Image (cartoon, rainbow, N blue to C red; front, side, top):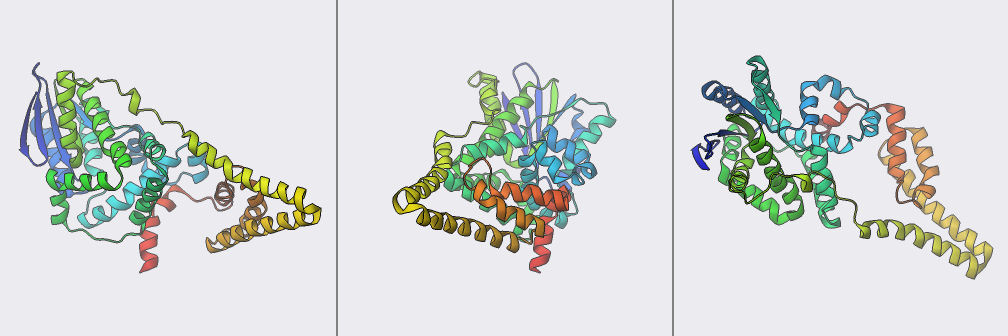
Length: 361
């Protein structure tokens, strides 16, 4: 395989059988990225276009109104919770940059899809399901990394950092982007492996196996280096094209299950110990203390979060029961009740970053 770097964001890969793959790296929110993609399709005339999107995100972008107006309860019932979180994390970061560059997040990928449809060029969605990516990142992280992952998402939502067009274009240069990835690898090695290394492999393999003798792939600039390295291994036979090992969500660890049940068993054990060793009166008193602590903290949380009054009552009453079952948290009960009473839409979550910034002033 011969890899030609024609610019920081344009690579031409030529294989031994004459096939070509053109990699077009984009910043996802730069106006120049949108124009570049259109120009490369015009000049290269590919017979197949590969897009760095999965089915779920592509459908949401194409049917944005339908997705934005979807009831949160329906999203959760359909098992799209991770998709919602992923979209929030991606949109909050890309929207801020997109608002400053007069370009909507992912516009160049949708533009490539539109051109493909207009010219009847076959195209394929080559990214791994974002829900699988997030599930794997979550399941393969230890408790500390999970906390850091949550903190990263929260900081993205509440950040109002601005970025100039010049700085944005600098991010498209592979060395700068790669240094960011290296920093991420130091901070969150398990998450970096899932979000970057595995996705590079998945994208590279999907593009490599896509039909066509001259394919053009629209990808994030940060994936170029990893995709090229993976394709070299695929072409040489050093790496297989089977992706089963990175397309399944790993099961929860046994340690997590044991810890989840340890707390309820400990509470029940303490209460039983109180009844047996100190008598019925002391046992009832201990049980009352436990109820008071459970209910008071739940009430405080509900009040601080401005929950619906009925939801506050239900949460308080359910707190003692949910604390004894690791599979049902009081947050799940209160969240479902709040979604039933107030019926928030997906757009409310998508606008959370803007609302938070406006609230902070």
